[in-house]
Length: 336
Length: 166
Picture (cartoon, one colour):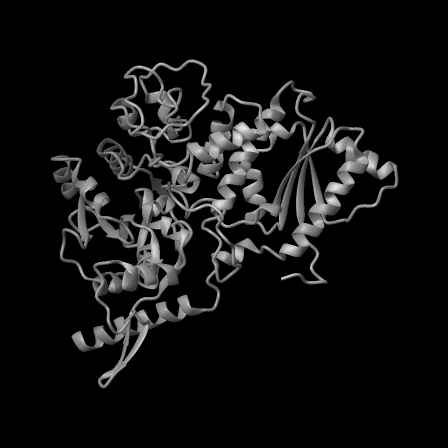
């Protein structure tokens, strides 16, 4: 639906996210005024006083563009995802959480029970003498009160409803947001289902010098002061640039910090972690099984956190095995 | 967990030059091994991307075997060393994701080792049978209908709220 004033209709929403994507939209600076010129913003809980029931009353497909950030971990978020899907012509998974699950999806290393146990009992700052936990239904004299259902497994937006475009990044860079908005305004849209942005990797944007990668030891960032000109991976730092989609301009490696993969997998990659495993296996300089095992277990104590920091929900396995599904003893402690 | 009627589904990636021929040899030598393996021939064990293994589990496999030429005997010089490193990386990650180690196996088998490959297949089938069905997709399907109920409740609540407002 185009408004009588000729403007398009825009909605923004957040689900399980940190709010950074909302700020990132404002990162386009004064161009936000051009967005306001081109669109009527009907819904943006962070900035505009629109109500859910206003959206519910709108006819289907009456929102031209919906930028949806955040992963889906409660029934309320799933409801909003379905509602905005029905009301929007183009639904964009905006940012890493909606695209791949991002940090909220690391909760998939635990079950709902474990998350509740930590949040409502174990944390030192929690004072919960009656052991109260959120219930989906509570009987009170006035009737029944409901809370949204908290899922065992965090989902991506694309695993919940059909998504038209993906805008990767944690958060997406302002220039990429603007490019996507311009593409929409000029009706130069990519094919549905595509990920907006580059198809190369962060390495292609990284100015560091690369030679043959051969490493005997992975190092943590605090263990070395990296050389400013040489590839970080060649220096033993676990840099995910080799598997990560370009688009950020290689900001982190340029300041000596390894890429952590927030732009998600490069085009054509189904599983970010699998790509990292493949790439790193080629880099390890050893043919001795015991030495290889030592390099890997000592150098990458938390492989899921290193390879799936942003993409666990969108990975092929999506989560750690649920303990109530099959009890699995952890031989090695997490982290390190 | 052990269930007498459970027949594990194991996906096996066998390299063209050694392990697939070992499986052929096992067949032509009339060596019996359980029919639980679905064999996929690849040109080299180095071709096996961890994606293949993860996808097999995500689609419901109970185990995955990767078989290739012995180290030093790769048809493509040293790609199976890459397999060795990749497998170590994959096993390390799968362990953290709560998959039992017996569900993935790297097996070296030369073209002459039909009997050894058949034994490895028997061993792995029994090991996976003892571990029980994996059924990984059930991990993330919250299928008890609770989500639909919760969403329906929200719709009802919103409808009621609208009635009051009107």
